Every structure is written in structure tokens, then in C-alpha cells.
Length: 303
Image (tube, rainbow, N blue to C red; front, side, top):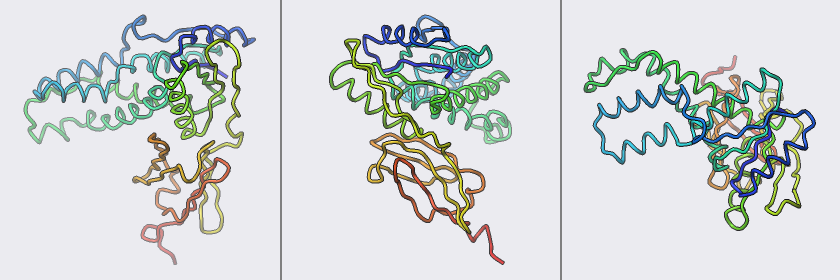
């Protein structure tokens, strides 16, 4: 276990962090991730600087600019990037981290994947700016400088690794220290749904008052997602602990599956061998989604 993250925003989060740190025999480094105390990040600075220039050239209304900036560069991004770098450094140094993460739990679990995909989508556009944008003569848009492309690639890579770490119970333990009352209940529900769509569960819930810690069932030990060949069909198994078939929305979008539950979504990239296959059947049993897929005869002709 590389990291123990205390989330949920309860007033007792700092106490929980100290308690978790004291319970771990390997004396991990205890760090706090707070944007106000640690400044910006080079990835964020490079992208924000160019985005400011680009949006100024487009001369868009202020509310539109604010919405675009908020979607691509959310307020929590500097903290997420620092957390990603801390996890990478912990792996290099072979030490652990116990930290209070001051990000609303649903945002912590959802944003890394979303922003990583947005950054990755911009990489080919920026890399071929003169081919894809300049010939069209779209106003006087400023060409991105080389650091922008580097920042997009680095940011996408950092956030993808952070997302993978959050989804892996062998890498991160997620301790929920929620406030009392309906707000805390809502945050727990959000965390459970989003983690289930990642294929895992909360590690523990720490209620206010310092007692009655609830240790939750661990995620399935089976290595999921997994792929199985059965005759001419492929079976894809995806872990969704605690999710029932009636609660799951499933949509295929190109080479991805979009999994939805209780208003939350997560995208799962199909293995390359299945990207030219059709979904025949889908079912959920014991917290595992199983998709039965067959080769698309338009791209896998017989005979």
C-alpha cells in the first residue's frame, strides 16, 4: 500500500489522518495536500497561460470563458497534480503517504479521468496546429508554444496514473471521514458509487466522534477487468462491487464503455481485441458485469 487518503471533508479529518498514520508500522511520510499552501504546478501554469491568450483572441463573453476554463482547468487541478506527483515519488522512494485530501470526494474520484481525457484530446490538435487550425484562417489565434504540448502530455500522463492509483486498492486506501448528517451521507453515497464504477470499495468509514470505525468489505481479489475466450465469443468481466443490474446504465461509445449508476459515469476502454466486436448480452451477478461479445462480421468476415 503506497497511500492512505483521508477524504470526505469532515472536521475530524485531520484527527483521522493522524490516527491512520499512527496505525501503520512502516512510518510513512505524512503530507497534506492543500492548494493554498503549496502554490501552482508547472503543467497548470503552462496550459493556463496559453488558454488565457487563446480565449482573449476569441473574444468570448466572460461567462463562456469562465465555463471553458472551469471545465478544462478545474479549481482542484493543482492539488490533483501534486497528489499524482507525490504518489509517483512515493513509488520511487519506496515509502508511504498518509494525507488529508481537501477535495470534495466525488470530484477527487471523477476529475482525474475526465481532465486526463480532455488533455489527451488536445495533444494531436496542438501537435499539428499549423495543419489542423492555421490553414482554416480562424481569426488570429495564437499558435501554442512547445511547452504547451509538453504540459498537455505530462498532465494527461500524471492524471491517468492518479486515476489508476485511485482505482487500485493495492495502491491506495480511501478513508472516508464525512461530516455528520445528510451531507456526510450524500458524500458516502457518491464515494461508494464512483468507487464501484472503478471496481473497488471504500477502505473504511470514520464517523465523527472518533469511535465506531466501519471497515468495509474489500474489493474482489480477482483481477478485473478480465477477458475470456469461449468458442467464437469473448467474455469481458468488469468488477462493479455493490452495483445491481437494475441500477446500471451501459452505453457503448466507439471503443469505450460508458458505465452509469446513480447519476455518476465512468468510461472503460475496451481491450483492443474487442474493438471490432459487437455486444451480444450483458448481465450483472455478484458485483461483476459480464459482457458477451462476438466478432462483427463486417470487419471479421467468415470463410
